[in-house]
Image (tube, rainbow, N blue to C red; front, top):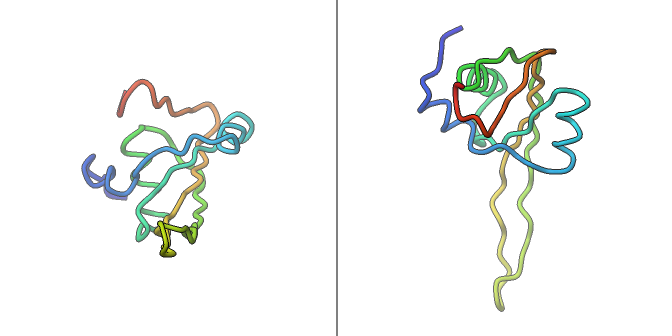
Length: 103
Protein backbone atom coordinates (compact mmCIF):
# COMPACT_ATOMS: atom_id res chain seq x y z
CA UNK A 1 0.00 0.00 0.00
CA UNK A 2 1.33 3.38 -0.94
CA UNK A 3 1.31 6.27 1.52
CA UNK A 4 -0.77 9.33 0.75
CA UNK A 5 0.57 12.83 1.17
CA UNK A 6 -1.14 14.92 3.84
CA UNK A 7 -2.47 17.29 1.17
CA UNK A 8 -4.12 14.47 -0.81
CA UNK A 9 -5.51 12.90 2.37
CA UNK A 10 -7.07 16.22 3.39
CA UNK A 11 -8.85 16.49 0.04
CA UNK A 12 -10.36 13.03 0.60
CA UNK A 13 -11.36 13.64 4.25
CA UNK A 14 -13.29 16.90 4.37
CA UNK A 15 -14.36 17.03 8.03
CA UNK A 16 -15.17 14.84 11.02
CA UNK A 17 -18.90 14.50 11.71
CA UNK A 18 -19.82 15.25 15.31
CA UNK A 19 -23.36 13.97 15.91
CA UNK A 20 -25.17 12.05 18.63
CA UNK A 21 -25.04 8.87 16.54
CA UNK A 22 -21.35 9.38 15.82
CA UNK A 23 -20.56 9.91 19.50
CA UNK A 24 -22.43 6.74 20.46
CA UNK A 25 -20.62 4.72 17.77
CA UNK A 26 -17.26 6.09 18.89
CA UNK A 27 -17.87 5.01 22.49
CA UNK A 28 -19.41 1.60 21.80
CA UNK A 29 -17.83 0.33 18.56
CA UNK A 30 -14.69 2.50 18.12
CA UNK A 31 -16.10 3.99 14.89
CA UNK A 32 -15.45 7.55 13.67
CA UNK A 33 -17.60 9.37 11.09
CA UNK A 34 -16.17 11.66 8.41
CA UNK A 35 -17.56 13.75 5.57
CA UNK A 36 -15.53 12.63 2.57
CA UNK A 37 -15.08 13.51 -1.09
CA UNK A 38 -18.01 12.21 -3.13
CA UNK A 39 -15.71 10.42 -5.58
CA UNK A 40 -13.50 8.75 -2.92
CA UNK A 41 -13.68 4.97 -2.58
CA UNK A 42 -13.23 2.87 0.56
CA UNK A 43 -9.56 2.12 -0.11
CA UNK A 44 -8.70 5.79 -0.52
CA UNK A 45 -10.60 6.68 2.67
CA UNK A 46 -8.78 3.92 4.60
CA UNK A 47 -5.35 5.12 3.41
CA UNK A 48 -6.19 8.76 4.18
CA UNK A 49 -7.23 8.00 7.77
CA UNK A 50 -4.25 5.72 8.38
CA UNK A 51 -1.73 8.25 7.04
CA UNK A 52 -3.21 11.32 8.78
CA UNK A 53 -3.99 9.87 12.21
CA UNK A 54 -1.42 7.01 12.43
CA UNK A 55 -4.04 4.39 13.35
CA UNK A 56 -5.00 0.99 11.95
CA UNK A 57 -8.36 0.93 10.14
CA UNK A 58 -10.25 -2.37 10.28
CA UNK A 59 -13.27 -1.37 8.16
CA UNK A 60 -14.92 1.41 6.17
CA UNK A 61 -18.62 1.85 5.43
CA UNK A 62 -19.78 4.63 3.11
CA UNK A 63 -23.17 6.30 2.67
CA UNK A 64 -24.21 8.64 -0.13
CA UNK A 65 -26.47 11.27 1.48
CA UNK A 66 -29.00 12.85 -0.85
CA UNK A 67 -29.35 16.62 -0.65
CA UNK A 68 -32.61 18.07 0.63
CA UNK A 69 -35.04 20.05 -1.47
CA UNK A 70 -35.30 23.49 0.16
CA UNK A 71 -37.14 26.70 -0.54
CA UNK A 72 -35.02 29.76 -1.34
CA UNK A 73 -37.45 32.65 -1.37
CA UNK A 74 -40.01 31.98 -4.10
CA UNK A 75 -38.00 29.32 -5.87
CA UNK A 76 -37.32 25.73 -4.90
CA UNK A 77 -33.69 24.69 -4.76
CA UNK A 78 -31.73 21.64 -3.81
CA UNK A 79 -28.75 21.15 -1.56
CA UNK A 80 -25.83 19.14 -2.91
CA UNK A 81 -25.47 15.41 -2.36
CA UNK A 82 -22.55 14.42 -0.11
CA UNK A 83 -20.82 11.30 1.12
CA UNK A 84 -20.02 10.17 4.63
CA UNK A 85 -17.83 7.36 5.84
CA UNK A 86 -17.93 5.36 9.04
CA UNK A 87 -14.36 4.25 9.78
CA UNK A 88 -13.78 1.44 12.30
CA UNK A 89 -10.51 1.80 14.21
CA UNK A 90 -8.57 -1.17 15.65
CA UNK A 91 -9.15 -1.97 19.33
CA UNK A 92 -6.97 -0.01 21.71
CA UNK A 93 -6.50 2.90 19.28
CA UNK A 94 -8.34 6.20 19.04
CA UNK A 95 -8.42 9.44 17.11
CA UNK A 96 -8.10 12.67 19.08
CA UNK A 97 -9.32 15.60 16.98
CA UNK A 98 -8.21 18.19 19.54
CA UNK A 99 -4.52 17.17 19.41
CA UNK A 100 -4.01 18.02 15.72
CA UNK A 101 -3.01 15.92 12.75
CA UNK A 102 -0.31 13.31 13.22
CA UNK A 103 0.06 13.89 16.97
